[in-house]
Image 1 (cartoon, one colour):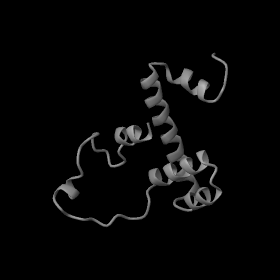
Image 2 (cartoon, one colour):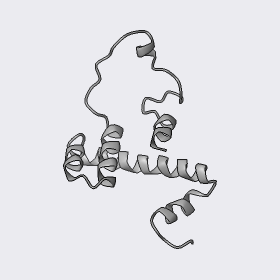
Image 3 (tube, helix red, strand yellow):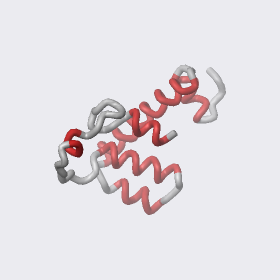
Image 4 (tube, helix red, strand yellow):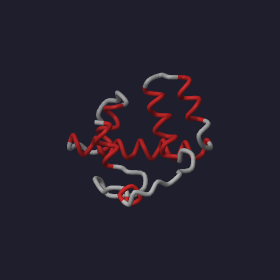
Length: 103
């Protein structure tokens, strides 16, 4: 499922399945360090795996404010994707994920 989510939400804004024009042209670009979405993905994955070392490493990839924004954006996108997959409203999926009773 994570692979599917990654394909749905490419951080550079390309549509799913659209090849990178730089790669297609045979050009290699040097990328700056991890962006806030990469940091958020690393942080959330590390939290899910309860990997303290990886959590600390991810926390140092960007500012706390940017990391918070990235985590919030990741949560929203994941919730939307799950709601679509299960054909349920996002609030119902969120409550279920958190183990809360139906509202």
